[in-house]
Image (cartoon, helix red, strand yellow):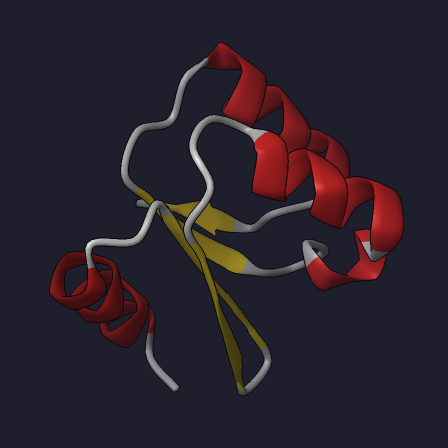
Length: 74
């Protein structure tokens, strides 16, 4: 799966965040950093090396992505 596909899904579904890690695409809909924070707490390996397409990346979201080891952000 390509990074561009994550961006397409973000736009098409109007969701808040799409995470592509390996061949797995995950879609999140909650506002703010809730989904990222829950993911970092519950399944930190999911963010490691993943590409994240996010509607709005603020300081909090960026810090969570760095802590999780995200390799790319849109």
